[in-house]
Length: 153
Image 1 (cartoon, rainbow, N blue to C red):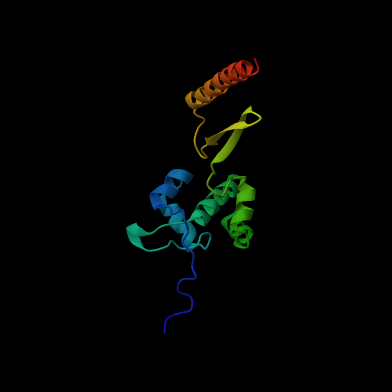
Image 2: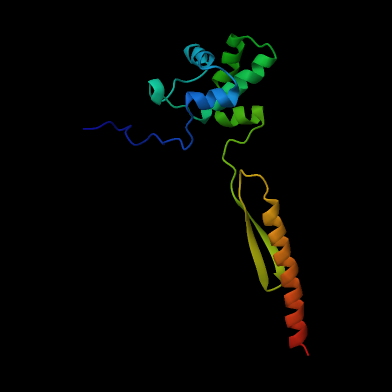
């Protein structure tokens, strides 16, 4: 008979390597490993070069960095962060924990005609695309006026 816990652990959608953590936080791997041994961070998932880290690790490292800027001793940091959940850490850091989502913008061309434009999350604004949308809106206004003007004659 298998364990009842098998299959109950949800996979985290975002995983980081040690190199990712180093690049994002500016901390060397040695310091990150030290924080794990000191109980400031949970252990990695896996071992060796294949070890991965989740969003919790990233949030906690950033929180540690923020508190260290205020010269808070590690013991006080450990106590402060021990009961904090990811959402509380994110609020403390004022960061978004979920990946940015796409949004849809409705552009009314006519009471009976809409243009739906997707604004992709997590990307810089594409001004060329915005110009194309503006051109579509302007051209549709002209065409609608022409067609409705011609049909009303």
